[in-house]
Amino acid sequence: MAAVSEARVPQPIKNRRRRIVCPTLQPGEELRKVRTHSDPSIPGKSDAAGRLIMPFPPSTSSPARSDSRNSTESRTPEYAVSVSVRVMYFSRDGAQADNGELLNISVLSTTTVEALLHKAREAAGVGSKGKLLFQMRPLPDLNQNMETSGITAEPQALHLLLSRRLRPPEVASRAASVAAEISTAMELAAAEAASRPPRQKWRPEEETPESLS
Picture 1 (tube, one colour):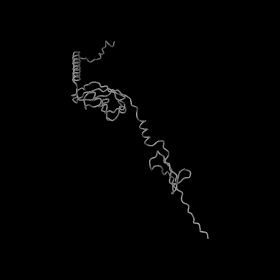
Picture 2: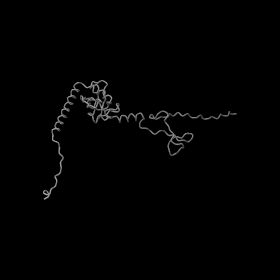
Picture 3: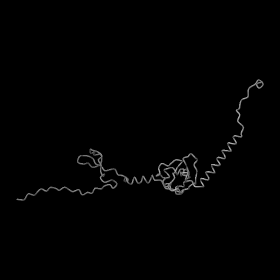
Picture 4: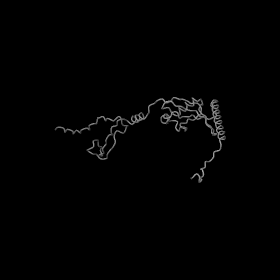
């Protein structure tokens, strides 16, 4: 009697296909669930529960590349800027401020306000003293560059504010001579005003019968 052949159970076929992952996606973000029910009209792959799983839409560039491109596009080109900084000596006693020398400094449009302040102090030879003014107002942010702070629009509206006790002798003598000239001019104007006859108030002529006839 022939031996009964044993029934052969087919072995499951192993899936040897290699899954291709989009290189622009982050790890773990290859797939996302876009709908909870399968829809035959939408291409994709359904899981055991009938939920449709679709890959992310293709991206033209990764977020890192996109950020770097945006930063490059927003960056303005670098160019040379020549600024003029007037040294001004000031005190809190109410006296007139004295102007010093004019400093001509060459910088770049990307130079920060803090770097410009250091250059102005170095040119004036005052060490770490002095405050930079733009349009007679303090600059609020020293980290801004020449373009964002508005200095490139008015490069001659800069002053280096210093204490009056730091005045060099030539600035002090020039200020004294200017003050003397102003005092002399005021004395001459007062003497000329005193020598003039007093002004008389104009009065209209009274009407008389002769003037009416």
